[in-house]
Image (cartoon, rainbow, N blue to C red):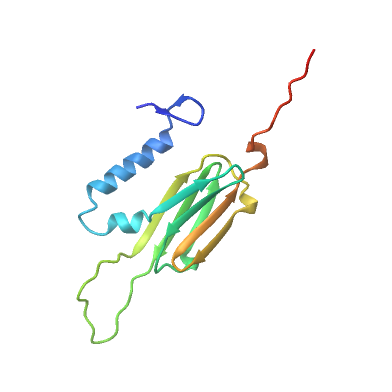
Length: 145
């Protein structure tokens, strides 16, 4: 199905794949912890200067998070380690998942990867991605002949 993109009518195969992943995840979300572990929730907000992505990663060590930028796609990978319990203890309830996770996030424009900053505070990862200078809108003056 065609979608309205940033510039008119377009088909974006990456967005279609992300939607397929979401649909597949939702289909099995009631059958275990796969959706929560593999797809941590994210928020994305923008301005003309930058994109900010936040992700909930409670219980994840910042050293276990890997971020990469390719063009206008941010990839977030990581591992939530299994929680160990003490000797003589048994689980009464175990809802928090563990294992590897990843997310690919289509950004609204290209970013300057050399200036990207990532900060982790109280289980929230905040990634600030400055807009690439070449991708910023430029005002063009109209001259008379």
